[in-house]
Length: 212
Image (cartoon, rainbow, N blue to C red; front, side, top):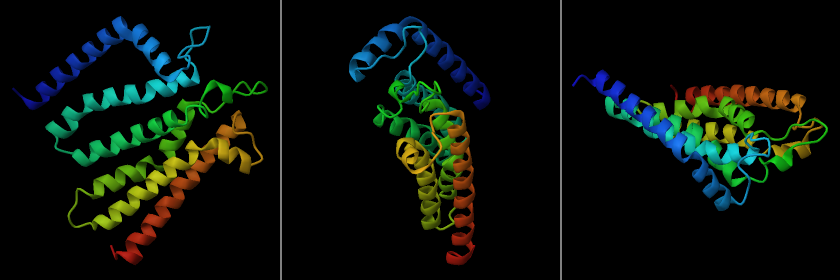
């Protein structure tokens, strides 16, 4: 069977199976998750709570990664790229799960109607360091690039991704309330600064330390 055809069949079957599972089992799954984490997945108006979003994120990303493993690793043999994608999405979602109280509905301010929305902070975290994480893993694919440099780049990316995931600590250090629209704009600027700084450090280390 042609490799591309096999990938298309795999993708189609995976999507159909995923839709069936979610349609039939989503309510009992959510009840078990609520019991496990002792939180409400949904609010009375049937919208997902912040806790619900945080709990579902690693589950959804994990399922998508299983789906992506075949085309990326089996078909194209690019395991470092798969690792970069996996770490990029699972790392912030698992860290937010560990900090569930911070990224919960209790963080919502009455004056702004906003809290530390997990979806927003996921994207801010990705913007701050995911590119460097991808770069670090991809560098491991090239034998002419020192592995030490790849690990330095990977470490910088993870640090940059981690900083936005502690908004409660950052809130104590800045004058703007991060649980507001201005706060999200501020965090977006922080993400851009982290992105630029890590790239400058990478260029300097690569040229002056490793002479590449």
